Length: 390
Ligand SMILES: *Cc1c(COP(=O)(O)O)cnc(C)c1O
Image 1 (cartoon, protein in one colour):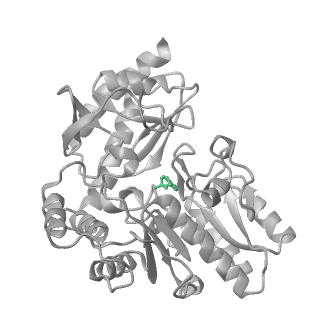
Image 2 (tube, rainbow, N blue to C red):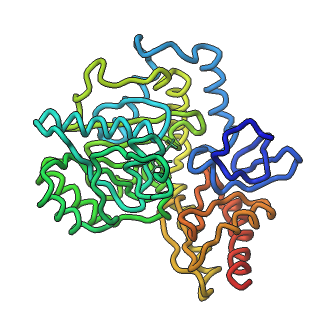
C-alpha cells in the first residue's frame, strides 16, 4: 500500500537518471523522452552547464527570503523583461500560482476603477491549474467536479471565437480582463491564429481590459520564439510562465506591462519560496543556454522536421485528423481515444503523452538532435498506424 495520495494514474515505471533527451529506468532500460516532464525539461536531463551553474549556486546560497533583496531575482526579471518587452515580474513556484497572481492583478485593476465585482473572460477547454481560482478558470468539468463552489468572476466563451467576446463586452460591464493560452496545451494542442490575437488585443484596448496570456506551457522557447505571443506582433498586459522556465527546478512568473504594471504594493501578494536564488539561477541559466546555443532557431527547424516527418509517414492513413502545433509543441489528433498509445510507446522505449482523449502530444526538450527526432519518428509513426489499423 502506497502512502501517496491517489492523485495520479501512474505508469508502472520509475526513472533513475537521464542525459539529454534520454532517461533510464531503475531496471536499466533506456527511453527517448518526447515529453520532457510535460514541457518542463527545456534543456533535457543533466545538461552539463546547467548542472554546473546550479551546483555552484547550491554551494553558495539556496534560499534567503523576500524580506531581503535577492540579486538573482532581479537579474532574471531584467532578462525576462528584456526578452519579452514586459516591465515587471512577480516570481512564484508553479503555473497555477503564476495564474493566481494574474487573476489577483486583474481584480486589483478592476477595483481601482470602482468595479466591485470584476470578471475575467476565460475559454472553453482552457487549463490554468488546480488551485481553487485556477480550476474555476479552467474549462474542463473533470478538473472542477467535486470542488464546488467554484470561485466566481469568470465568464466562459468558446476558444477562437471573437464574436463571443464582443457579445460579452456588450452585456457585461464587470469584465476587466481576458485570460487565454495562445496555444492550449491540455486542451489538445489547439493554436490561435495570429489575427485572432491581434484582434483580441484591439478589443481589450477598446474596453480597457487587460490581455493576460497564459504561456505556462507554450512559453520559454517552445514554439521557436521566446514567447508564443511574439509570433503575432502584439504585446500582452500580463503573461504567466512556469513549466520550462527552470528546466526542472520549480519556478513560476507573472509578468506585467503598461496598465497592469505597478498595481501590487507591499502586502498585496507574496510567496515564501517564490524567486529564491536557486530557482532564479535555474531560470537565468536556462535563458542563457537557450541563447548561447541558438536553441530558438533549432526549435523552429526541428519542429518543422518532426511535423513534416509525421505528415509524410501518416499521409493517407485514415483516422489521423490533424497534425498541429508550433515549434516543439506538437499534437496529432486521431478520430478516436488513444490513451493506450502511451503504454504501447512506453513498451518500445518512447515517452509521450495523450491529452484531451485523442491528441498525441509531443513536447521534446529543445536540445533534441535531428538524429534523435528521426528515432522518435521511427518509433511513433508505425505505432500510430498499427494502432489505427487494429
Ligand atoms: C501546466 C499548466 C498550468 C498549471 O501549472 P502547474 O505548475 O501545474 O500549477 C497552467 N496553465 C497552463 C497552460 C499549463 O499548461
